[in-house]
Length: 381
Ligand SMILES: Nc1ncnc2c1ncn2[C@@H]1O[C@H](COP(=O)(O)OP(=O)(O)OP(=O)(O)O)[C@@H](O)[C@H]1O
Ligand SMILES: [Mg+2]
Image (tube, rainbow, N blue to C red; front, side, top):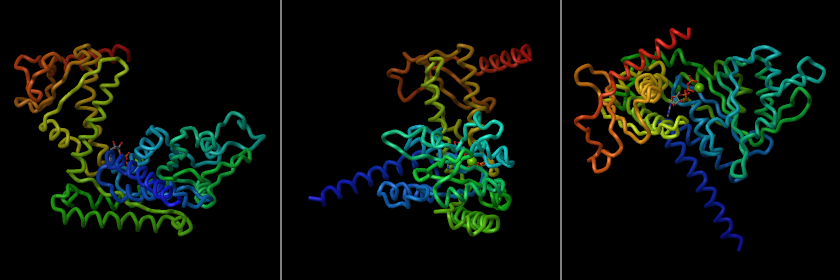
């Protein structure tokens, strides 16, 4: 009778791991190797096979800026804990001195501020997002190469024993934590490799694959040069994120537009409406948002500036009402983005979002709203 139960359990573990993999693939573009490592670690945890005296998994993420290292940790928290913010994040550059380390572990009894400091790495803080579905914690050490010697020692202890002793001698258990460390080591070499003309946009697959290998090597070499073998041996996997090519950025743009739509539909002001972008708009945003040095970060900025800010202007100046649809296109005359709106009644029976001939054009109104906002800022300042 035991066999069917085991089969069932293996099936459940497989389904949970598959769900995580699907969620990560929906959110993270082009970083399959990193996804595979994370999913494998989760599966090992579900099967109860990871070492109970160490964190569930320890990863070092290297690679170009804006390639999804931090987003990967957020996406994991989103999938497993239901909230992208369920991550204890430590910016290593902020903990250079003894008193700053106290923000992480608290001061010893008797020291000034002992009672006031609530250590960031306390058990409560680590476990605050646990639920009956997920009892895992996600801890992210950003810019690990900037960690001070005191922070390194603390980190090595966590990686080695899965425990940390706080200033007041309480012990924090990290055996249910996934630890992520991100770094920009080797980024100068990577930027040089990705300079225009070096195939960042992946014009041919060969270029793309060759570049990726070089980037991976630059990351691995930099890690070897900068980190001690003692540290590298404690890491389950060091993954160098790949540079994003044009197709990746296009897929990320679709994701970002989807997030903007979700934000609009969940708007606290209650002005909930849909928008629709033509392919020309996507090309426009990609042209503006592609910069090899900043990866998808630059693209996000273009979406904020060209789309979110004008849409916010429409909301705050009451030019768009709940239920309406805003159609965004590129003006054939000026080449800039043109916002028109389509009242909701006209949507019904309207074939595939066809534009209404007399749909009001919002571009001048947006310009007016921007002028008004600038004037208000001047008056306030
Ligand atoms: N591979 C990706 N898939 C989906 N979105 C991505 C990807 N890479 C970047 N993004 C988008 O760009 C934003 C910035 O990326 P992220 O913060 O993950 O960069 P990073 O690799 O951590 O860079 P840095 O080294 O500068 O910290 C993310 O919030 C996400 O919206
Ligand atoms: Mg980051």
